[in-house]
Image (cartoon, rainbow, N blue to C red; front, side, top):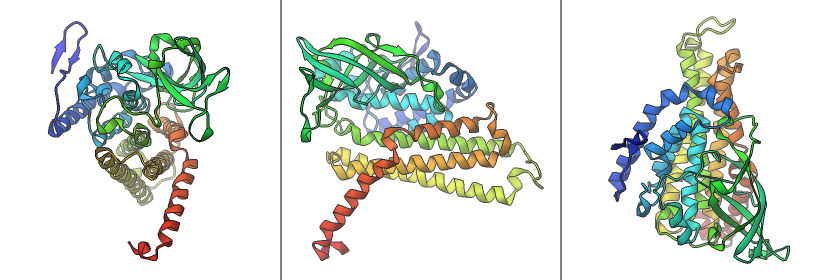
Length: 415
């Protein structure tokens, strides 16, 4: 890996990777992340106080290639297999929740943007693959048909990483004459669009309980005419590029959330073990924490929960990737299955953080304790719409329907 002397950061050449080379690239990224870890951890308070990732740390992620993880090889990216990318997101979340969240959000943008027309997609990557994304998938904007495209207005929340993004996206209800255009099933037509970050306004609204360093502010547009070529249909559109990563992007996103949650939970366990390893002896305890049978019992239970979450994430990631490669992931039952996995992993990781915080005792309540930050970050992450527990209802409905169909043919009940 050579160095660009003008900016003092690594230059990663664009090459075509086969699967073994992709694995080598993933290992190199993980090694680079481990090198960055001590410097990131030392700046945790700075990240929280600034309510954003410091620009030099965002540039460090860009420099080692994090933002090009899922960018196609045709545009200079690594186009890593899904399971590899999930491991890298977890590794970043283990160091710092906000940093990992930003990486997850930006790389998630890389699998969504192929839904754009090829013309605008090529424009996004015309200067190279290290493009950072931000935006919101909530359809809280309106796009009114007008000469030259669509007149867009809106105010979108939770635009994580908007202060260092290169491009940002929002979603709109499409209208004509002030009335929503009909979409599938009679519902209003929803489309996403993408514009350079310089075209947006950022409102300083991110005063939150957790993930404070993500800079997830509101972003706004007022009466901006957006060309039709900048719009895309994420639900039913045909991607402008081949490749299994880009054919059913919405189905993959809950696993991205599972990956960051597992990483943050692993970080909480690391923090608890580091505290116990100091020889700390809690008030009225007869032995140090690490020698306490009660502590050891609870620690064993927490480790089991975390191993289960990690195993579930890997199993679901591998299953989704097989379907992606086979071209069969665009399926309602598989979508529900992935969401179900993401919810369970998120909920389990919150339980891990709660237990680690409780086991640490009174010392965990101070701002100086990383465990209170892990607790807040994981609870905040689990509030995201992608892993809200209400979505269990879809998986339950599908399970009941599948049983009913099988019961109509008794031979299928034992299949």
